Image (cartoon, rainbow, N blue to C red; front, side, top):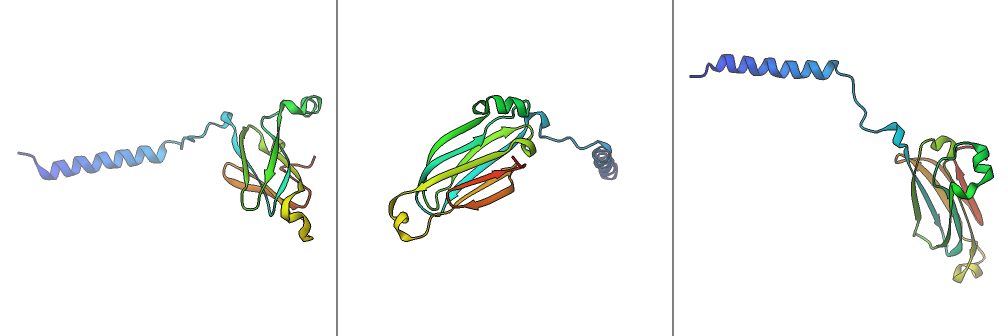
Length: 148
């Protein structure tokens, strides 16, 4: 026969021991900082444009390495922009505060050109899901986490 009082007391002691261990054990981050940060570049337009998007896809080891061969670290994509259809590019950067950058430029085409108003471009950069930069412009727009 099981002594209910002793069983409940033993269970309570076990729960207390687990709670104590959780309280004194330091929190362990599940994210590996060496893996970098997820950077999402989003470019959209208010009308029809054709052009290109350039964005940083990897961290250069230094500014001089970037200056010597920027195409090694940036992607350039020919793009067709349409209203309400954002273009999204994602990469991982170790230091997005230094290197996150997207630029979009475009020329008007289609019925939007004769209406008297030029469609606007919009860019944004999100780091680990948090939007950190946004900009709007007409023929070219740049979003960057630092001044260039």
